[in-house]
Length: 350
Image (cartoon, rainbow, N blue to C red; front, side, top):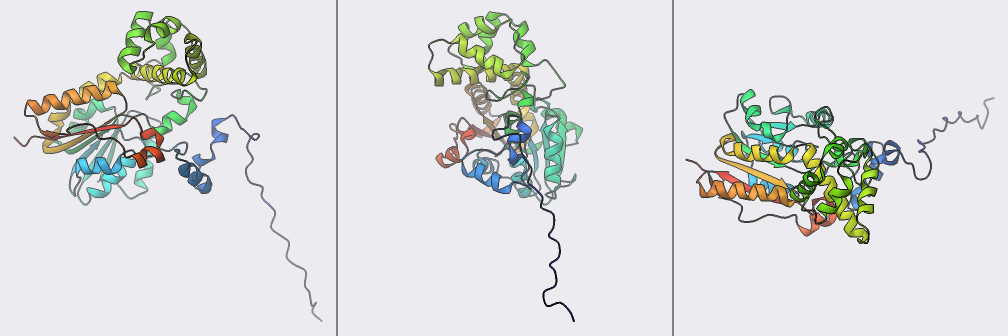
């Protein structure tokens, strides 16, 4: 007779979830589980709900405002001068189909292939989406090399991407320990550590003033110029020591400003921006639209001056009357958007 209660099949072996090195792991790769969003969707959701950006990603800033300024339409030729994580490009690409083409520029050889793969998986093939490793100074050469006489849309988001800030191996972060590098393209130029070791105090003071409006430029330059700092945390600590009696919050602001100033110098960002602004009118078709997103006063001053001069010369038919800022809701949900300023221009028809 068959048994009334046959034995149950053996249970599947239990698989333990991945363990991390201690309660508070130190390694970046172990600490930020949201870098693998497919496995840790719940973690990603919690990070977003807290008003932060998941590590290894980037939340595009002022998307609605940029789309309103650029007014993309099917068939447009668009250039994203700073492709980054591809958030703005994705929205523009969707609106210029069918028939439109977006050329995405980015100097970062590490992040550019990742972003290209990300957008390809969304269905944007080589007939609608082209990438080129170049900074925004190369906009004219990029257009010419792909046979475009001009663009209907040009976008330049001048901010550092969250992927770069969040990865300590790139040396951009003031909070995480890593090599003092800061190069957008780590295969070219000198790192920030080499710049500091070679620079004279007077030159460093001028750099801190011009690139970051640092109020303690002279005293910081005297303490930092010609010194060896191999790690980001070494430099941050040296800045704190050089500012005795300064409130903690004010010292933190100076640290961020010094890092900003060095990053701009290492990547020659102002020179690249000046070249972009100088070449922009010739790269736009008549009636073409440009939008530029800046994140500090040095950038915004250059953009405002150039667009206003173009308006007065009849090169642009219209420019934004003032800066456009993120909404309070966006600033609350994405604190990295707080310093952003948007300006736009329309190329004259004649």
